[in-house]
Image (cartoon, rainbow, N blue to C red; front, side, top):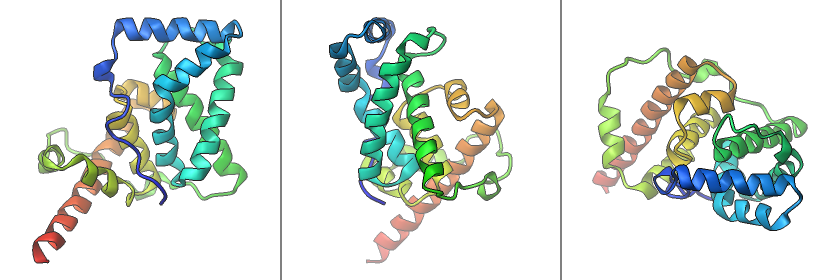
Length: 203
């Protein structure tokens, strides 16, 4: 894998109604042909878009190319935005389609659902406690060792800070599937962190 997505980038804690209204206005300006507005959207969301693409593709250089394709698609599709989602989640959906199209063109094998764990327990398990205690940098490194689907759902939920409903819309799967993938990804991530911690205590 090349590069480590910045898990702290673009947290929605800095987001809010005012920011979302500003994003919507910027997108309307883009639809009217304002390239400065597109540049501002790139400044606001480019890093988190790149992180999401890296989670899917795994290669930094290719991801940067896909990011440029994504911003071009945003420019072309701005008029289609209807305000039914946040601007950020709309842009992430475009980025994911661009990444998926690139993978298909290059005939990369997509990981199937068969690798994921079965329906998880609704109770919060010990893996959540482990993740809360883990260092952000350690989590970022551990995520890179996971399968594509695990990386992707963790990136959308934790790095992009999207709701599960938004993630389901972006991934074009039922909400229950998102919950299953997220629980499986958390368990897998916890196992990696636990293994790294065990090796560290043996040194």
